Image 1 (cartoon, rainbow, N blue to C red):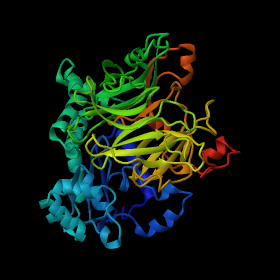
Image 2 (cartoon, helix red, strand yellow; image 1 turned 90 degrees about the horizontal axis):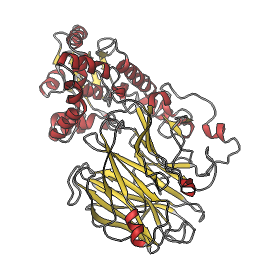
Image 3 (spheres, rainbow, N blue to C red; image 1 turned 30 degrees about the vertical axis):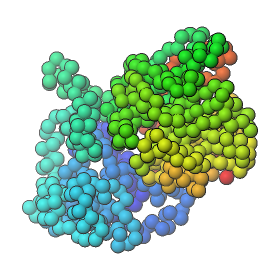
Image 4 (cartoon, rainbow, N blue to C red; image 1 turned 45 degrees about the vertical axis):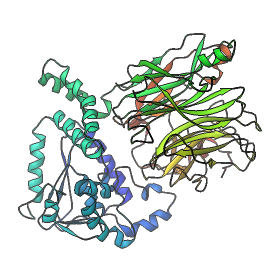
Length: 592
């Protein structure tokens, strides 16, 4: 391998996924062809023409694992690098992320990207800082200078130098045999613990994550050998160390009396999953006090991938006397914000009555068991979905750039029946001005229910409902999306034309990459999709009741489905042919 390109990166990404799931394989080695170069990075001559080919975005978009499917790979099993020559740019970034790297005495390393007007985009810069500290990392990255094998060894950037340039591959094979001779289960867990410590900000947090994930499974068996053997079967597929689920009940509301809708979740740093939901009583409350007491967000906790759940507390209105009527949101602080430490869980919700709608924020320092009022983000008129009314709806919380962002739907702007907007806070007490995210030119358009996440290429996707048009269900609320460089600038960078959101996309949101997949999870208002950190090959779907259940006093359980994500996503290159919009809606006039 001399240089890489996006198509090769996708192919190797699939190879490493297959390697992780193939039980007969324990260790892999990557090396370059010949004796002069390990990998010289990306072929820059291919970048411009492939980027112009918008019909084949997989030719220029990278997989999340980046160069050679390795530079940002987390994976399960160890991969060793036999560095037989020059390792520059993406080649050096591959070496930095391999588990063990053995270099030829003549190997040379470096990140020359700044000299050609780009930067090391495959994860090498933060790994260089982790290994060397900022001063030495700056010296190598900003100058683009070459690093010899001897210097790389002294700086702990590689594991060893081979005796000769001709023996580098054989010495790497011998090291791989040493690893393969040990317990494969022990290697998998040890490697996971090492990577957790390397990539986590907190040593204690890294230990606790590994301890919580693996220790009890090893120790519960009759003796250590049986534990390792049993755990080996469990880890034969790391993505399956928790079971697939088919409608497991999280909680059952009182039948004929209470409805659970609008479920939302957060995965905590220790792997605990918290789920909350909007609780609605069918009976009309006698007065405002009774209505407030009945309106709260129950909180449920699980630590085994969704198999079992505990009811641990409620988020209740502590300031308005209106209750928390609808639309919960959850997020965990991964750094201190204001007076609240890392690990604090935040909840937002809509507190409403005939006097107004308030989006309020609450905090929990005990993983969801108890809550305290923090601040009110925004205030609007009484709940009323008629255009011209002035309520606010549907908050979502997110951390970005050392601040908390609260996204929500806003009917207060006289120029829009409803728009999507956000406000930010650096201390959770004071919130900045309202910033538009999606503000349609047509007054009657009503985008709603903001959901945002980051894509593997570091761009951001905003997904929202649109209250008119085509959808696969009976309700005409299709899902639309926008892509932008930051999650704070969607209004100025609206991205590609909007597209339906009942599909999977492996092409960074490219319009031609959406494919409809059946999951068999129950329809609900509205479902939450989840991919747990420790189960990246699985898709969780959390459902409660439907919007119309209240008309017939139907109390559906709050349930979770966990299905095989790899089975839903096409791992091979996307096929050519008509786009899903053309397949499912042949008469659709595309909207900009």
